[in-house]
Length: 301
Image (cartoon, rainbow, N blue to C red; front, side):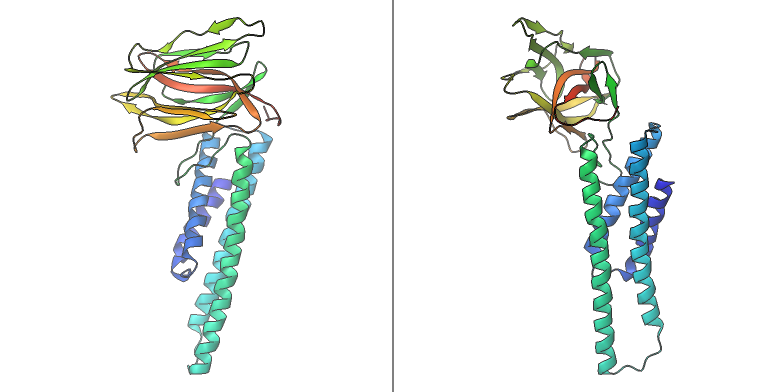
């Protein structure tokens, strides 16, 4: 199992930390990245992702973890062997041993750097599919991506309170109206069809919110490319706390308020356009997700 290999690698690297002084920053980066990958694998497994591409990602993570473990094991073994040698120390032998250790330490540092570079490239390739391994160990924003009536549905962020809503206009989104205060109370959309008719959605959320923000999008030269924000608890409710809209030319927000205990989310595309929204709402905007269309790349269904 890929996750088991990752857990084993993290454990082994942590155990051998005493021998890794001098390359500790590279080792910290490596352990952190492996922790994120482990969270990604757990998330994918909990969602029962069985697509071939997900299996390939799992195999690559396992290979990265095993390579990292092998580098650290080899280095620790060399250090142990050298410390166990019965040597009559003089200035020359001390100098030789110091040079040997510097060479070995450079070699392990170079090896770990190569693995870290491979991990960085792997993370960048995942972003093509809307997957971010997070900022802290244990975080992952693996979004389930499925094909829905000609558009790609990106799974919602937030809670499941209230009722489900969905907005799929016939044209591009032209305006977004957000009512907010310390949270996002409601959201409403307007779009323009090809014949010039303005289509308005219903208001998704409650009647609260002391502030009203209108976001005007100069379509078709400007179009939505994604959203970011935070969600967290408001009393007993898990809801959207802040939101920012990203377009091909700019960004708007954030609206609402950000607390360090809230959870960040983000889905911003290069080569894609947001063609609709969905989520849950009741007294507040409980959750929000996207419908997107690739413009240059094809995402797997």
